[in-house]
Length: 277
Image 1 (cartoon, rainbow, N blue to C red):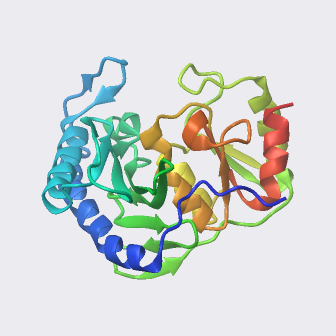
Image 2 (image 1 turned 30 degrees about the horizontal axis):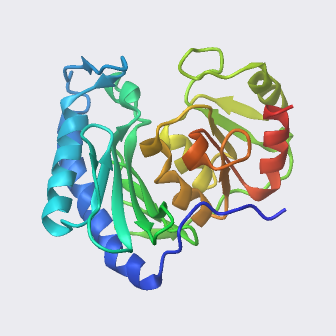
Image 3 (image 1 turned 45 degrees about the horizontal axis):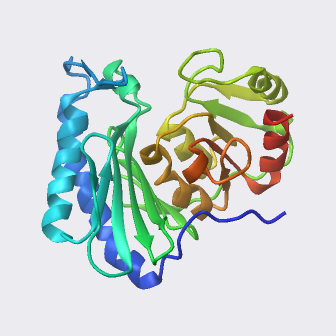
C-alpha cells in the first residue's frame, strides 16, 4: 500500500538555494554546542520540568539571529524562543529549530543528541516541511532530506546517498526508542512489549539519533509515542527522502498527532498492526 507523504513539494531550485543555508546554520549551532559538551555545564529546568542549558539557548539564538538578518520575512518556530510569524505574500517560509534534541543525553555526557532544523513552506494551505536536517555535531555528521532524496554529509566533506534497510520480517528488525516503554517519559503501553518480543534487537538509542539510524540503514524501526512539533518537522523529509515511511503511532499524520513511527515500507504496516491491536 502506498503511504501518504507529509512533505511539501521541494523544487530543485529551492533545494539548491537552501542547502548552503542549512550548512551555515549547522556551523553556527555547532560553535555554541561543542565547547559546552563534556564540560560540566549548568542545567536549568523549564516550566515543563525538562532540562535546558546555555548550549540549547545559545545555539538557537545564533541561528535565529542569522535567519532574521538574512531572511527577515521568514517565520521561525524554535523550542527555546517561540514563534516569529512569517510575513508577506504566499508562498511563506518558516524555519523549525530544535537546537539540542536529546538534552538529557547531552547533560549526561551521552553522544546520542543532535540538532534538528526544518524549512517549511505555506502555499496557502498551511505549512509543510520541505527540507529537514539531523545533525550530530560531536561526530561532524549530518543528514539532509527533501522527501525525495536523503544524503549523509561527513566531516571529510564526503556525501553518501542514504536509503532505509529493507526487510519484511519483524524477526530480523532492530527497534529503537528514546526510553523504555514503562518509563513516564516514553508513555507507551503493553503493546510496545509485544513488539519488542517480536524483533531481533531492541535498544533505547533514540531521540533524533533513532531516525538518523533508520534513515542510514542502521536500524529498522524508531518509535516516539509523544513528540513536540520541533521534534518531528525535520525528521519527516529525512525519513521520506531515504525511501522510508513515517506516520503517527495510529498511522496518521505525525505532524498533527505528534507521535512517530518510522520504518521501511515493508515493515510499517506490521509495526502499526502490533501497536494498535
